[in-house]
Every structure is written in C-alpha cells, then in structure tokens.
Length: 216
Image 1 (cartoon, helix red, strand yellow):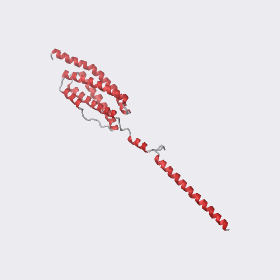
Image 2 (cartoon, rainbow, N blue to C red):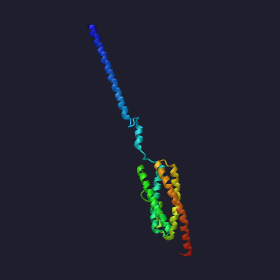
Image 3 (cartoon, rainbow, N blue to C red):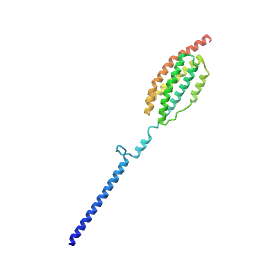
C-alpha cells in the first residue's frame, strides 16, 4: 500500500513539473511574438531604427546644387517681373510693351510654382532683388523712349540666354525629381522668351540708331 502511494505521488510530481515547463515555454514564445509585433510596421515587415530615421527625414532636403538653382531661379524670376512692370510703363514700342507683359505673366506663374516647391522642400527664397538686378532696374528707370527699349531688350536677350543654359542643365542634372520637373517644364517658355527677345532687340537697336541719325 505504501509502495503504491509513493508511486502515485512521484507520478503527480512529474506531471506538475511538465505542466510548469510548458507554461514557461508559452510565456517565452508570447513575449517574443509581442516584441516582433512592436518592431513591425502595418505591413508586418520588421521596422528597424534606421528605417524610422529614413522615413522621418522625408524629401525636405535638397542637394547644395539644387538649392543654389532654386534661389537663383527665384531671384531671376522676381527680376523679370519687376523689370517687365517697369517696361510696361516706360517702353515706347508697343511690341516691347507686349513682350514686357508676357514677362510679367509668365514669370509670375513660374515664380508661384517655384514658391510652392521651395515651401515643400524647406527652402527659404529671397524676397528682394540682388545687387546686380537692382542696379539694372535703377539704370533702366533713368532711360525713356527708344533708349529704354534698346537697353531693356538687350538685357532680356542676355538674361534669357543665361536662363536657358541654367534651366537646360538643371533639367537633366537635378537630384530632386520635383526640381528637375520644374526646370524641364519651364525651359520651353524661356526658350520662347529668348527667341522673341532676339527678334525684337534688333528692331529696337535699329530704331534708336535711326533717330540718332535723323537728329531726333
């Protein structure tokens, strides 16, 4: 009788030990699963620390070359609008006045697009003309009639030659896709401006030379 009781107690002890071992294994498995779930994103893939940093960085940073282009494009666009408004008032030729109006319209539109992109990228744009453009505006404001037409159109040829070159380069070399798209979309308009300026400038120069010859 005592032997049977000892056997029963031994079996009970073994069963209890196995039960405790099973519970401990389940707790370990559950804890591991919970940790994995915390490491995963909504798709179930592991989300490591560097992944979080990459996601939080966003697309707000631009390369130094792209930032330089954006700021120069903003300065140039602002100058085209201000000089265009000046030409609308001071130009004597109706053709020059029409060209100036187009400068105001087209560059105002491009400037607004650039402001929107710069805001998304965290880039602060200049709010006033640089020294060179301010000097050009001051020089033109002192001219009138044919002299103004000639000087303004010659400046437009020179400025747009430079603009076309810079936008053409950025349309292929830009690192940021939004900046590249802006440069590519704006380039044809600038090329049209340059073409038109080259057609008008000789007429303005010829008109000024004719008046000087006639003594007017």
